[in-house]
Image (cartoon, rainbow over the protein chains, first blue to last red):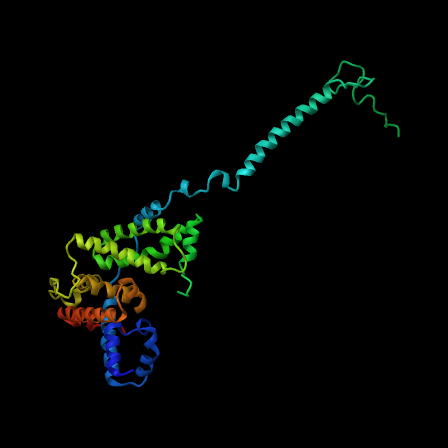
Length: 146
Length: 191
């Protein structure tokens, strides 16, 4: 790289090597290492403008702007997957089904325990039959003396 | 384009409605977009409106973005700049040529009165007085830190043309800022 090219490079891209074109960066650094006065002068001139430009600050985004932008994103309701795709759907559904099944099972059990058996010679006692002489437990063997 | 677009994954997460992805995109892009628009327009309120509009386009684009096309950040800069130019045209301030714009107020200030805020305002005024294409080139290359290839791609020009715009922009700024007694703006370098 010639000193002239180095000057044009810094006039366009400034003094920071990371701002120089990648393809010329190594050559420019190598030239700089030779301490040519014209090259160093070009660098110093570019650096002074870089410093000035670096003093132009832009304030961080205000929280109100951030809120407005977040609000402009697809809304929370639209962002949810359809209900049938939601992972918890089957849990609540299974819960309802489970409650129903439990209720039916309890009913069947109660009926089976209170209703007389059909097709058998003996009438089994009812769990809730407190008027008869026997209950479902009274026919059980007495193991108390064993 | 062989390099993986660093924003592609986040776009996919937004498209997949992943919680937090929207906020992450805002955190990642808003400061840069706001800085770009502020420096292009010289007006904070207008810059905020531009930034908001860009994000509306991001949300729409997330589901359509295809890997392997232009880098998302390049597209984002182009969208933001187009919106800036719309507003500049509305103001009838666009000067795509090299005609000298109206000079800014360059009344010198005593050094002790030129605090950091005043310096920043002076530089903003000098930037605003640049022809729009020169300002665009400088903002993209210096402040947004795009490579020369990326900046040229955003502007739709060759790298040589970019380099020419940059040289003229920096020359103009140097003379304009030095014109207000360069020692005030240039003189006290932070060593």
